[in-house]
Length: 414
Image (tube, rainbow, N blue to C red; front, side, top):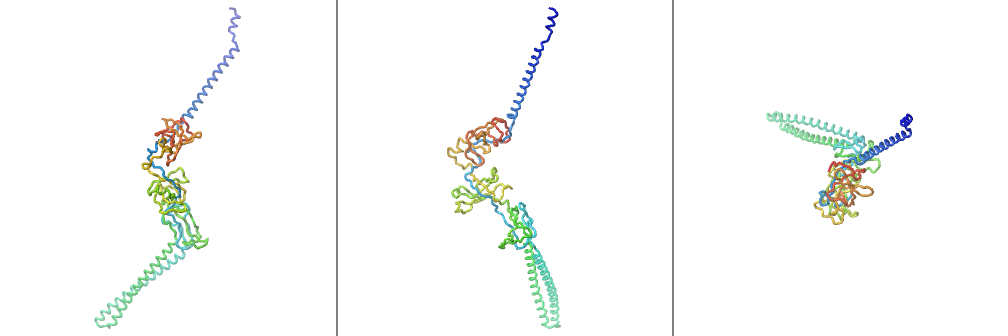
């Protein structure tokens, strides 16, 4: 082989080299793109399928296995206070101080207001002066009576010795009896003066308005400088009350029950109350009494309901709905075809949610949930009958809005 052929073999083809480099670059780009897709898919899986919800579980049960009571009657009414008072002064006068504001808690005997007391203090001072004068006169008469008694003893001795006449002895005796009677009368005057002091003190106490019981001020009806009177003066310039106090511990509920269903209500019967202001809050209650009279215009009977759990959110005159309960052991089997029939089970009402326009519950299977379509039925207190799941199925009590079929969960309570 000559020298020219050898040089031709050692020569590098530039076009072939360019094609080779371009092919290697395309391979690297494809590999990088594939890696990015894999990472994105993994992140999406972790984001959507790796999220774990902390939930509470509830068990679907048939009506015959429920231990809780169910509602047999509902009625509406209002929260009322058994102890409520509009406080006023017992005398007519001008208010000098008003020491309350709406919403303030007061104790029994706490001073709420003061009325101008100049006249009452003057009367009390006068009564005290009269008492002191009566006491002084009684002391004077007592001293005179003591002297008269000593004179009587001396006259008795002188009569025995025939140094004075019998008439002198009788005069001394009369003086003793007269002073004793005057002293007794003056002691009665002292007692009268003491009574006058007490009366003046009572009138002075009337100028201080106090709380008759512990409670909360719900209305302030007067201001300092206004005239207050325990009776209406017939005009618009005299107040009849300082404020209104409610004993919050005396709150109860009054409802009107249709007289056709009053036979379902008994004293002591368990009940549940729901305030219009807090529709998701169930308050345990019981029947106190059935008022023994009917309203002929409304054909209803008033029933008093006691509140078993006091709460600051319960306020007078709030609207309320009361469900009268019957123990499960006394319940009759529901007729076939209704929500609580044998094919239905009861689950918490909060476990039923809407997904894509359908009612579903989320069944708990190990650490995942499955959305099961159900047909809601009748409500029994906090429970609701559904068809579509079996008795004993564990469901999520309150599914969050973002929960979907297949989501991972951790059960925190049963």
